[in-house]
Image (cartoon, rainbow, N blue to C red; front, side):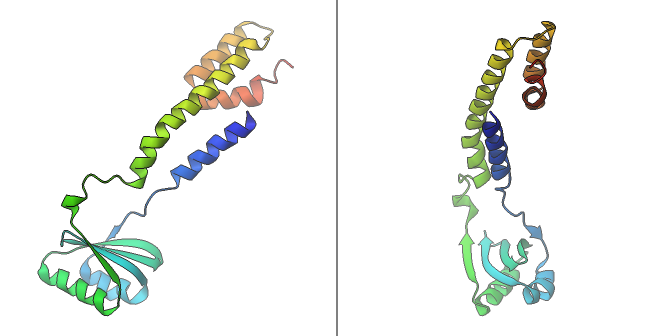
Length: 166
């Protein structure tokens, strides 16, 4: 049971940290004066010709630059081409149905987490029912605690409740 609990916590921590960097919105002038000179730029994306996403590696960040007109677009493209930075042009109209990594994890991990929860609940309730409690009402208290406070109830029963009558 201990191994399963630690595996569950490890899985939750692993998939909880799989989030993408959120872009920091800055102006084109701010990018050209401060960011462009002081950071290493890996790639850039131009989305619908009205926003540029700049991916840097030192520090590892994503910058979103709103492009107000054609001259802003030309200016950022010229800078990126001169510095030999890869530019990906994206038309969002063709990519609206794509799922992000977080959405995919949510779709596939949610049923797995429900199954894991059901298995842990089954084994804990089975253990409670089989164990002898000196005041018989303690058994009912543990069942209610495990059902209505699942995670805390599991942990309390595992570390405290199992050993109370031994």
